[in-house]
Amino acid sequence: MKKNEQIVLGFDIGGTKIAAALGTGDGKIIGSKRIKSEHRAPEDVLNEMVATGNELLGEGGYKHSDLTAIGIGAPGPMDIPKGTMSPCNMKKWVNVPVRDHMATKMGVKTYFDNDANAGVLAEWFFGAGKGCKHLIYLTMSTGIGGGIIANGHLIQGASYTAGEMGHIVLDPKGPVCNCGLRGCYEAFCGGRAIAQRMQKEIAGQPNHPIVAYVGGKVDRLGYPALIEAVKDENGYALDLWDEICLRNAQAIGIFANTFNPEMIVLGTIACHAGPLLLDPIHKHLPQFCWKEMIHAMKIGTTSLGSQMGEYSGICVALNGLFEEGKWQLPWEKK
Image 1: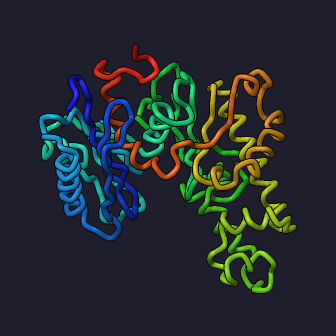
Image 2 (image 1 turned 120 degrees about the vertical axis):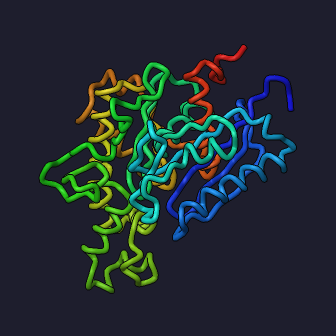
Image 3 (image 1 turned 135 degrees about the vertical axis):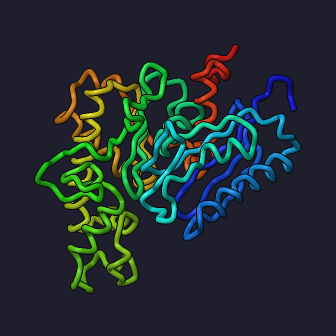
């Protein structure tokens, strides 16, 4: 181990799997593994997380005493001050003390935050938003989550729930969101919501042209099929896509006017769609946002891609160290 090298262990907890990674303070991933989480009791998963952490240390040639910190990114609901989680998509997990379990078993301080905050930290430290003082990250996958960096710090809010950007209400008469509100950004543009909408609208129409993109199985309709159909200029797909692009621009305009970011980084769906999504968003944006905000802001896609899970937990740890004055931002190092 190099002198003054900081070694951190990160976990990105998901409903089906957990990404575990060992990395350094300068962003090098030393090793990574996957842990199955779906349909498993939390105590079994937590014990495997400890075992996996020990394996990564050993395989990397490190001792427990070399480990600086652990970081955990996880889906909500969660109680960040208490370090517990009760995620909606993991039914057996209720008030699971994941942070303190890892801290006790591994003998090192453990930091804990939601997965969208972990994502914005990863993009900020080592991704597309590296070096920005004002940055927003939108997960844009099954749902839409968000993380906010303002004046060079993560915004967490009074109850540690800041950044629920997928649940700003764009239309109080809009579709009911899975969160219970009506007309949320996520209800218009989230992956699950779009799949549910397409399957409902195409139900009973096995000969509809868009069904050909999913092998005739309506229950498989969603963003992948929609994007391909838009490329082929399918009429139904183009109409739906126009609405999605407009709603994305509406939400992004609200974020831009509120936070005046240097950059907004978009996640999975935008990565797959590319200019097909970004170009119409730019076209619609002046309807929803001042020109000063537009000129100051870049809209791009994540540069971490499939490595997001490896970086996110590590970056939760690094941010905890940063806020305590124990780690320096990469671009500020001499």
